[in-house]
Image (cartoon, rainbow, N blue to C red; front, side, top):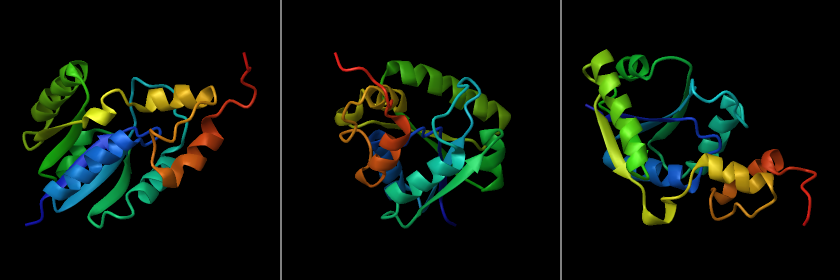
Length: 167
C-alpha cells in the first residue's frame, strides 16, 4: 500500500521554507500531495490558485513523488477521499504549534483517520513566511534568498510595487 501524505497550505507564494518541508516529506512518504487550500481567515491572495499550482510544480519538478492539487473545502474530506495516511505541517515557532495543534485536533474530531505529522523547519527558515516575502518584495527588496530561483522572476513581477519611493 502506498503511503500518501497531504501537505496543505496557501503557498502565496511558495517559499524555500515550504520547499524544505515538501522535500523532506517526499522522503518519508510514497506520494506527497501539495494541496493549495483556501484560508478562510485571509481575504486576499497575491496569486490565483492556478498560478500557485504552476509555481509549486516548477519548484518541485525534481521530486518525482510530489503532485499538486487545489482544494476549496474541508481538508479532512480531501484526506479521506485520497486515502492519505498523514497531513504534513511545517512548524517555525511555538506560535505555529498552538494554531496547528488546534487544527490537528479539530481535523481528528471531523475524521478519525486524519493523522497530523509536524516537521520542524530548518534553522535557516525559522523567520520565513509568505507574508515576509510579500512585504520585502513590495518595497523592492531582494527576495532571492527566500524563494526558489526558478520562480523568482514570476514572484517579483507580481509583488514589486511599481512606484515605491526612494528615500
